[in-house]
Image 1 (cartoon, rainbow, N blue to C red):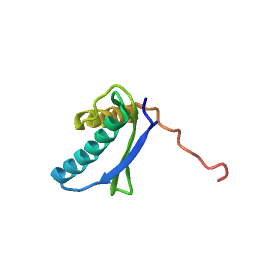
Image 2 (tube, rainbow, N blue to C red):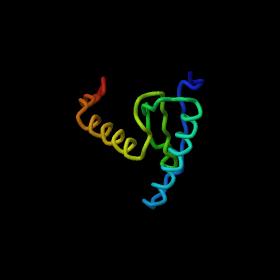
Image 3 (cartoon, helix red, strand yellow):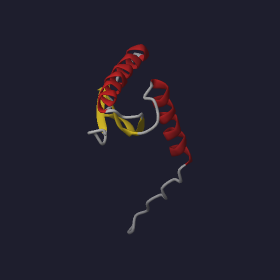
Image 4 (cartoon, rainbow, N blue to C red):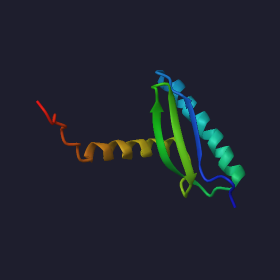
Length: 97
């Protein structure tokens, strides 16, 4: 039985694509080591976002996916697609002119 209910961590974001990929892979490697030690069967990504444009933050819980860069990319793309198709907030108007 696992001891951890969820894990959140972050990595630096770089403008250089290769460095950014390395940073993300290192973050995933550390997470994979932690979940293996805790006995998780796999993961589900709950959240992934940028913080102040300098850090990529991820939150995972036990699930059935293998935590890879490809899974992270799919998660980000699905979230992007969902936000593009989400209903837009109605324009706010002043109560008094």
